Length: 295
Length: 295
Image (cartoon, rainbow over all chains, first blue to last red; front, side, top):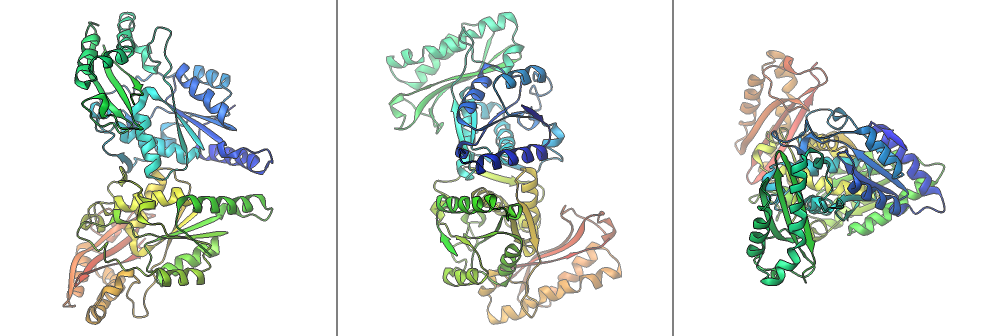
């Protein structure tokens, strides 16, 4: 495993490796480079992405970069948790080939003037609560995709809206990579894995279980009437039983179109239902979701 | 020469060709693919781009696509001149390998949600007169760059602001291609080559000479005081001697930063002075410019 800090070195290393696979008779270069972009402070959710990439691809690249562009001015960019030592140990165990860990100045050598904006999909859910967030995500992912040029890129479905936004960007801009969405990985008690879980106090951690518990009951609640408003109200009431829970949004939409619907039977063929939520416990904002096949 | 209409076919053909160059000992693949994106109705200016690409690269790709995204609602998208037969003859003569001529539905299979916006550089000159124009240009060029994945991409300096915008996008987004700006090609009498010149009536065509004549005198005029305001006034007065000329803008800025300056001695080291203009003759809007080394 090699740890690389500059764009130029990563490109030159990847070019060499790609040539090797292209020239060898045994090449399966069509799934040559698998890429897992992260902000570090890796957990079992990231490990599952790396494992999938390792299974699919000749070369696995992990990037660790806390991207300032996707944090709002009042958000947690400065205090976002970092632990490069532990990250590298996890990467080694996952048999990553290259870890790309650029400094901010390497990714943004001068103030960036070019932004990628994906409309419609970004003005709801997390996009509504975090203005500009998905512009920052789309832009840095585009940069990383241009640097790594992966055949496949892996994202966790905990950030389901992020997956939709990136898939749409890749399709609209004719980028060559294949976006591979991977299932949410949870703690034994149900809390969705997140680098931000480390912020939680013991009491907040305990009460945060209400999120996965609420999402687990969605199928059951839907059987009653199938009304989306009623479902959202039930979820809200359930989450409010946790005294420390401060709801940002609880929302059910069609997926991946992210369109408002009144009833589960409004979910069009080929689409699913996403029940997504963002809830603060103290200063810590957690997101989670449940993606359901409903037709 | 092959004429290709779909993204999938172009990619598969280019992949084959690239493999050939990668595997052969004699490969000079680092300048493997040269790309000239155009809107067709080709003239000697486009031919000069193709000639440069042919000199530099193993494989030359020309695209012909009138991009609806970069035309305003009141602009000339519908009546933009088209002549595929003549374009293909010119391409054949220029020894182009692949001509990519997609239908609009191939480039925009559904309404696009993803836009690339380059700030600052796009809010002046043509960007001020044509709101959204450079978003449309940047977005379609990004799409084409993702489809063709060229080592070098060629643009004419008649659209000098376009060159700056694309260079900035490529740099900001870490795109791998090298942007090669090429000199303006002019008719024997000085008029800058443009597909839109065909719109001009005989009288408009005659009077349009005032543009290149004005730009030719910039060096002389600058020797007097070096004041930018005075220069712009002289240019304006000169152009207004043509009765049919309706000035949109006449502007001198530092290049490529496109910053306002008061005096030529304000042009920073490493920068040049661009004197750019847009002038309408009847319904036809012409642009031209003169790029000067001033320090």
